[in-house]
Length: 277
Length: 277
Picture 1 (cartoon, each protein chain N blue to C red):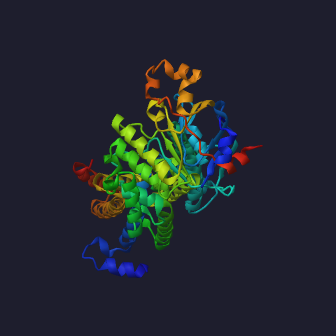
Picture 2: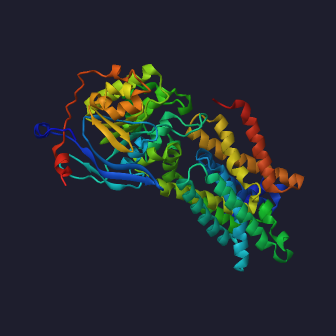
Picture 3: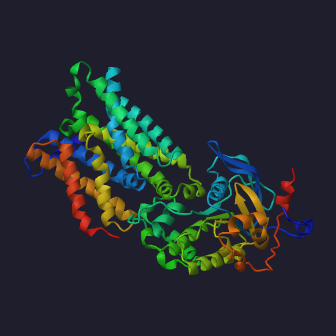
């Protein structure tokens, strides 16, 4: 499958499309941005933008735990840590109504500080700076396989849980009256978001990951008249931002993740004048 | 209870009733509800009134199974069976969405009624069902409107239509007319009153506006953490404790009460038999 992708993109009449690392990066960027763009729609509706930002930042502690355990690739440690953190945040959100923001903010700062302290032992933090700004040009076929698996999982989740999460965001009691297991739906969505954010961090960087989750959906909100348009526009804006951002970063020799975020921001600003009531 | 044995023997009940036995709710150290004993019968509109913070909404959430509580909530159908999970229609006090959310009435129904996700739209069959439900509540023209564009009265009619699809065993209305103008309030109560007769529904309506609902309710319960008074609207409004709390604020209250309002409860034999300890 990868060789097919390489042949296809190799046919493109651009300089950047001749390099295997760019071809891989393009596929990874498209997959990740699709995941982020789709999940972002409900992250905004559930008012979870701060939650997802906190999950992204706290991934640093996941990296640190991986390093302490001596793992070569800390991804699994990151995934487990962020899933557990997402569960505790979702528990907090359900238990405490207004003050959850404060607690999430505290835990986020704590997790970032803890991660930095552990990773900077013996002055070795610079090795881990790829997690801050991301490194999409180092994506390999195995990474793309992980993204594909995640895409399938999210697609399945989206078919079964979208309605539940949408009703939950309108009124937990209404969701309960429709016999929805609100605690499970909330927790499942939190964990799913945490997993997608965590996997994408390696490529986009934890400093800006949240923007790729929020901006496409926020731009789609400006234009969409119903849920169908909302979802498709958000996915489309995510794809467009990652595509233009990646190519621009090639010519400008800049960090890809941050450049994609600038592209997403440009899309958002362009939709603002058309904001519907 | 104020229900004579004579009425009991002569009445019959087609569908179901709801029974609360010694229900109490504590949030932390705060007692929100204590020793609530209630029987709610089909074909009856029961208004639960009381000051702010009296535990009215909590009582509805307890019936929905959303709040941990002491005591028991039973649902009985005509065959004295206890269906564990009756279908409850619920009209929330308010929905939490930002007015610009790309969420139409059709999306809302899609999410609540369909298995397939709301962003795929309503199926042809569902579209007819939803159209009829909206017509019943006088909201047929609102199907493709965004929720944020609806007036308070329109939104309540949409939520009522949703709560009635499919036809519930029990209908719970939480302050359904907050944000609705005076003319709309009467129209809404008239519609609910009509639905009760047409479908022989058991309806619980929570409000702090005693006077508006008095003409429509079969039974009124004055709640302030405990049940202070219950009976016909005239009996409850004439109760000394009720007058003490509400009378000073609204001396004109009694004007709205028809002097002859003496409701005869339709009763449910199965329910009463079950009620004996």
